[in-house]
Image 1 (cartoon, protein in one colour):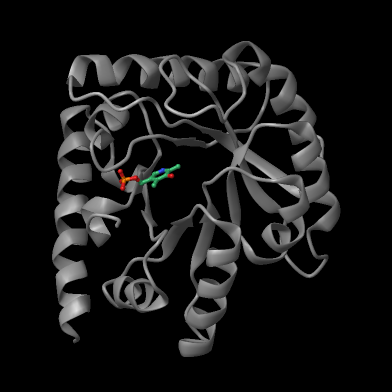
Image 2 (image 1 turned 180 degrees about the vertical axis):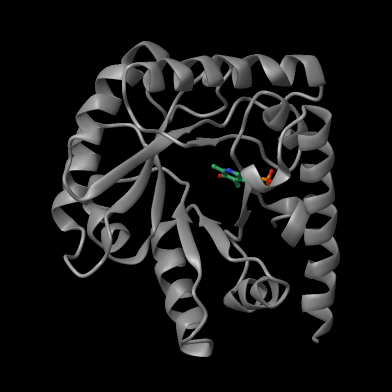
Length: 235
Ligand SMILES: *Cc1c(COP(=O)(O)O)cnc(C)c1O
C-alpha cells in the first residue's frame, strides 16, 4: 500500500470514528450517514489512494477540474465504480458536461439549471440524483434558494423526467460555537420534513463538513461532505 493510501486511510478512519460517535450520541445508526470525500483541488492520485482505502463517493466544486479528474481516474482504474457529486455553483453553459459525468448534483438552486440537466442527461445513464441547495440563515455564500422558495422549486424539480430529487443541501456560515452550528442545521431538517409531509419521497439531507459534522449529524444529516479532514488543507 502506498504511503499516500496509508495516510488517507488513517484520516478516513478518524472521520468514520467521528461520524460513528456523533451518530451514537444521537441514537442514530452510523450506517445511515453517507460520507462524500471532497477532493476539489486534489489530483486524481489522491482520489485513487482514497478509493484504495475504501472510499467510493467524491465531491467536486469546479466542473472543468472535475471532468479531467474523472477521466484520469477512469483511465487508471477502469473497473473502479465511483460516485461523483457536484457540490459547487453551476453556470448554465456548463450543464452538459455535468449531466454527462456526474452521478449527483447537490447545488441546484434554479429551475432553469435543473431543466437543462434533465434535458441533457444521456439516455444510457440512470436519472441524475439531485439536491436543492438552500441558503439557510447565516449562509456563507450567495448560492442556494431562500427557505421560503424551497417548496415550489422542489415540486418543479421533482417533476423533471431525467432527474431524481433526493433532498436538500446547505453550507451554513462557519462558526466554532457548537450550539450556533446546530441552528441552521435544525432549520434545514424542518424544511426537509415539511417537503416529505407534502408527499415528496426524499431521503437525503446533505449537511456538515470537516468542522461541523457532529452538529449536522445531531440535527439529522444523512450525508456529510468532508474535504480537509481527509485530504488535508487546500492551498
Ligand atoms: C469544500 C466544500 C466542502 C468541504 O469542506 P471542508 O471544510 O474541507 O470539509 C463541503 N461542501 C462544499 C459545498 C464545499 O465546497
